[in-house]
Length: 252
Length: 255
Image (cartoon, rainbow over all chains, first blue to last red; front, top):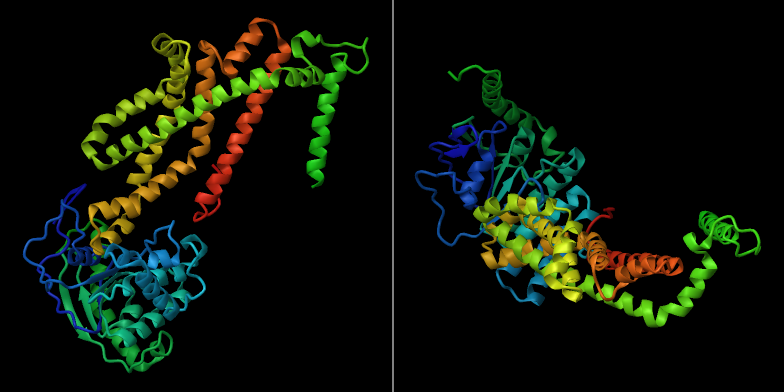
């Protein structure tokens, strides 16, 4: 429940989704369906005016990482300074955190840029730094809130590939939220379709596309096409209802 | 480069015209009485005669008043700004008061400062402080409250303590906001000190300006003006250098 400017908004209700460990889990749903709220609830970032009734089962001691849509880099820190933020908060000694950060900077192809400031980087590079900042902390679960939404189409393909590669190498559990169906099908091993407010999980799909996936190659396969169409049928109903609502009609 | 030469030539030409029209080039060709407008050569001689004992001393006085006001203004503005940023009730309570106080034209305070602190150093420092404080206060408050929410959320996901959030994310941002306003603060500190001296003082460039005007020493009035101009220019240029160094993380902007 949110205390919004127009009274209470119930963003998420009775939501159960079982996240597949060591896989990429993707939640897709129309804009404003409470996807971000869900992630924020998991990360414990909801404002005090928002109430979560019921419980959120998250094993104790689980380490979280969170990648936001906007990279949220600290502008006065260099690439390496941003990359080691989490380790610095965890009070890791400087030489160690520096070498770990540099390690990931090289793995993500940003070697040589470690002393650049965020404003000197392109959007794709900045988002990579945000990814590095999360990955160096070796979280058990990585939350991603439309992480590539602010990037241009070409950059997005590249960084999607990057994510696929990183997942293959690390086998992290990832929970990614997007409203881009193509992105969702491409990345997801398990895909959840979310309904409009109050949100529920409408359906869960296991996406079995040949590995390793590729942002371009996978997209032009028949299998991809078939899955895309199948889920689009479900998703379209949700999107259409939202449009009707916006025109002032009551929900059925 | 060509433009720079043309500009220098233009200034030299103006100085020459000034000298010429006040009878300094051809003795019996005097269009304007140098009693009112002085002349470049008279100013030059006055600088030679008065710089060391008088103007050097006055300059130091004004500069130290401005500097003391600047430092006090930065420290107090930072402290109060942070308090406002950290406590929402305090901000709601105090913000309209601050706005009201800041709206008061500070030169109007100068007579009161004279009444309270007399002719000495303190009143001028308070004048400079009263201008700098609000600039720093508003920059601190804005800097601390306008920090990117996603950055704070990132810090929270990393389980940063309140102290860590303050030290790693809020304070550096605030200090950079203050640096961004440093040039304005420095100019205002000088303005405050000089206005304080206008109203009543025993020393300082503002005092010397008013004294010379009262004694009809036009040459000295101009000399003092030029020294104030050069001083302000030098201090602002120095500030710009410091800014460029400290703010190198930021894309170039002009304020």
